[in-house]
Picture: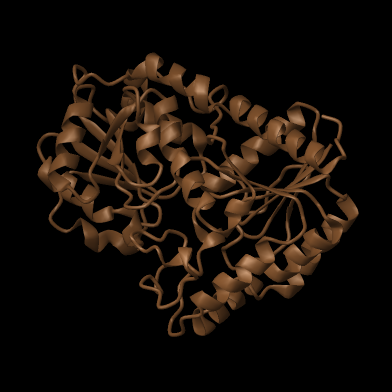
Amino acid sequence: MRVLQINSHYDQGGAARVAACLHRELLKEGVDSYVAYGRGEKAREGHVLRFETGPEIYASALLSRLTGINGWWNRLATERLLGRIRSWEPDVVHLHNLHGYYLNLPMLFHCLDERKIPCVWTLHDCYAFVGGCGFFFECRRWQEGCGHCPHLRDYPASQWFDFTHWMWKRKRELFTGPAPKVIVTPSQWLTGEAEKSFLGQYDCLTVRNGVDTENIFYPRDRRMCRDRHGYGQQEKLILGIAAGYRDERKGARYIIQLAKDLEGEARVILIGWDKENDGMLEGTGNVVTLPRTSDTELLAEYYSMADVFVIPSLAENYATTTLEAMACGTPAVGFASGGIPEQLTEGRGIAVPPRDQQAFDRAVRRAMDPGGGLLRGEALAEKIRQENSVRVMTRAYRDVYERLLEARGGRGEL
């Protein structure tokens, strides 16, 4: 069986890491696996292709912002991808994030429909069934066709024009063509929302994201990690991932306020910090910022030595960073938005009402207390191994591939 995954990035960020882990595990299990991606660092792995170039992405991003239409550019890059699809002849195409200024959606879906290639589409956000944005927050206009968008300046942003109704109609036409499809999301929350959309005509399933709990994300020696990175054994450490903090959705203001509220009680470590955001730190004296890193060993050490991991997002699906922290034995605190509460059940962490700073502070204090009633260390890590390992995720996706091919009447060898 030959599987081709398509995503915006490879092994950089949540969806990209899911695609990379799935690819490696499929290869390990003998499946003929390929990944094609549009942007980011060039991968040094076999069967992995970056088909976009930097100038093409910048041109597409500019056109998208100026016109308000995204996903309709990148013809040359998409033709390179289609050439590989024709030569590789995959039995299943597994789609992930198709936004990111790297892909021409009509060209891709016309190819899939003409060749009637079965598709598994994993939704890591809401872009597939709304007119423009990645997360719709309180807006329900996508159920009727979008237009008059209240989030026009959110990613992927439009500078002036509102074509969200036009894009919603075109997406509905493109995404419901004759190619067989199964819609997958990592959270019950997003599965339920997809079922209410025009994608609800397909089977909508939940497959939890998986992380590498065997080789990367597992508990390290807490004392050794703190010594190595210069933190005291008795210090209370709060860890967050600061990528994308210019986006209000990420809730940077709540973790910054948390640092102010807990000054003298704990230090807040933010990994993935952009120096352009230094102005946010005014009035804080207990925040440590570290740049973005692809060093997963370093990440695992920081996850392991923290007392609590915080995810202050106001809209989120099923964050892999939270899984990584918990796989390293650290409980998490976040807002009860999207799929976050599903990750924090059964003692894994605490979900509090969105935007409630006082409840957020109280939950973090409780999570830092060893007697706070939350799982931590090996007990928490074992929970993640059982439910969110790469092996568990891969097994679930192989079942989806099988079902899709059986429904088409052409079962491939696994």
